[in-house]
Amino acid sequence: MFGFKELGTICLHLEQAAKSQDPDSSCRLATRIKDYLNTVEIVYSEKNRGKE
Image 1 (tube, rainbow, N blue to C red):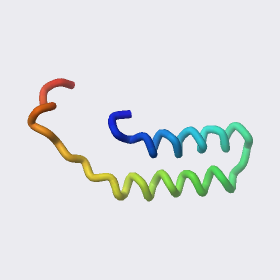
Image 2 (image 1 turned 135 degrees about the vertical axis):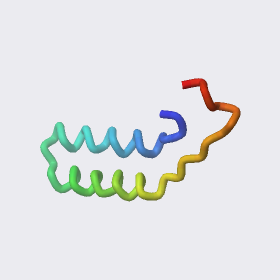
Image 3 (image 1 turned 90 degrees about the vertical axis):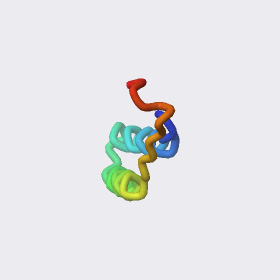
């Protein structure tokens, strides 16, 4: 996930909560995702530009 291991882990737990039909955990995890994404800082490197 290109350095987003924590996000992947939270999303995995969210998927499990959804499959278990656990709305409380799903809401809590969705909030964790929102909070995580609000703190992510994207840093571009000239070394990697143009390789998409």
